[in-house]
Amino acid sequence: MNEIRVTLPQPSVSYPIKIQKGLLEHVGKEVSEMTTSRRVAVITDKNVDLHYGDQVKRKLTDEGFVVSMIVLEPGEQTKTFSVMSTVYSQLIEAGLTRSDVIVALGGGVVGDIAGFAAASYLRGVSFVQIPTSLLAQVDSSVGGKVGVDLPEGKNLVGAFYHPDKVLIDPLVLDTLTDHYFADGMAEVIKYGCIQDSSFFMKLAELKTRQAVMTEIESIVSRCCEIKRKLVQQDEKDKGMRMLLNFGHTLGHAIEAFYHYESITHGHAVAIGMATLTEISERQGLTEAGTTKELRRVLKTHQLPAELADLTDYDAILPYVKNDKKQLKNKLHVVLLEKMGNAVIHQTDGDFFESLTLGGQKP
Ligand code: GLY
Figure 1 (spheres, protein in one colour):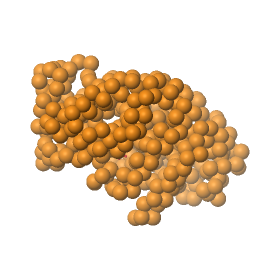
Figure 2 (cartoon, rainbow, N blue to C red):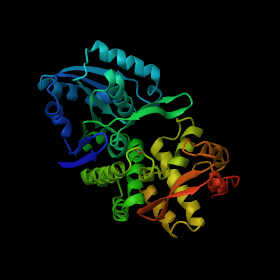
Figure 3 (cartoon, protein in one colour):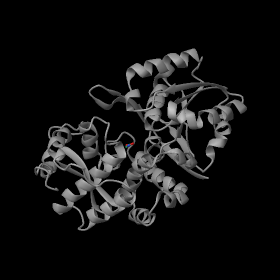
């Protein structure tokens, strides 16, 4: 088993991320170790429940837990206050007290909503993240960002509230479609781009999903290790943690433009990383040849490097300029000086101006 410990001084928080194939079999013992309570609520979605709900419930019941399953509709549309309020009601109905535990079993949406429930229900209860998508295993389950969306935008209400444990079983990735496996690979590739060129080179060598799965424990561990380091340096996302947003300014704009429907997060981030690197390379801010390398690795992992219809860039630019992290026309973009070395570059919305070339490739 690989174990990584996240340690934050203020307020004192320290929790393990455990990564092991087959770890789901030990979930009962893992939760049992962290509490004397014997009541737990598992928050999941219908798809994940179908695959892993019974197994998790059985393992917890075997350890003497009374388990309540709260099963949500899958998808981003679940991350709302109206769903939150039904979750609170179900937690009350289940008799969950402050000393009990919430388990988040699912991808990023489940982790965010269950984490926010844990942060706010009875002013805070313990919780365990069991991420089941690659994206959640390498990113959203670690670092304590939890919350819900508003009609005005994604993740506009939330908290930094850390789990007591993150339990990662890479075998659960077997039930992901190729599309969602690739979606998570975009975030995996991002870690290589921002902090570790040899990790990036390794990803270039692993040509298929099967090849990635043979090394999956060390791949997920490397991503979590990089994230741990950045979160420890800058928990509240005001400095170095922003490096994790490489490709995301444009990626979020693309997701919003397509109404969070036709392009999923990882695919939008892949396009964002490649397009931004092309712009910064052309401006002499990135080492020559970096975009080509990045595009090649994205392609290897079934990810796009540009929009299917380049003329859409014209309409996407206003969404970039509306980015919530843009203040007084100052925009912080994360760009690569070279592969494995990201920096925060202060610029303005005009940085992306070359996107509006009437569909010419930027
Ligand atoms: N997903 C980026 C972060 O946790 O900061």
